[in-house]
Length: 278
Image (cartoon, rainbow, N blue to C red):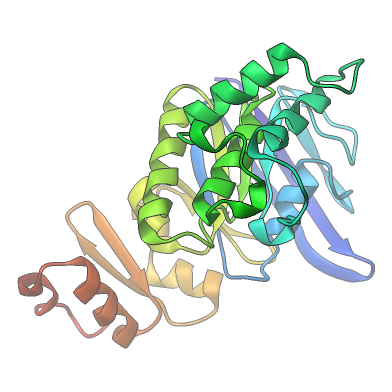
């Protein structure tokens, strides 16, 4: 299978500060991957470099076998930024935010057409929030805002969507809903790369993980990558991993692990937990 996106020996930074170096990985059609690492590890910078918002210092990004010019992005790549970077007080509705994504289609006229509006409504329905189409974006919940920006990323019929910490401001229920929606999109052939520091959501929902901290630490299925050693290198601290059948739970330190088990597992099971890494 031909890869959609290839990142080859990428390096980037700000002014004289290096953020990451020698990053290489590949995304294929329908691949659902997580980019995991602590806050400040360079995940956002990496995504911005891939979509052309930042120019790399060195290395290359290839799309469908063609090298991209530095600082550019193919139209068929959608991007969902962190909610903290958005001006939620800007007077615009959810539908209008989605239609902003149509401008990448090189429209001659700046005004939305009936087709644009129909497409925006279709995508808001697809992500489950058609009923908020006319509401100001600042009045929506965090989960609804994330779905609006996902719809905006999908409006150009992309083959790849990159999401930067889309569950950071959502409660557990909203996180699981969004990840299930992304998994469904992946099953329809969309390649997805989602950055996050929520290891347990990744372990539950994502089949492929890229561990990242100012560079690539390791990558692979969670069952292979989520070990105390690799996660310790990624988060630069003691990490505890508990495995029960196909389920993986991760926490920093034995005390945090016990609290996590108590919240997620039956009492009969967490009473038998070991006191150190498994």
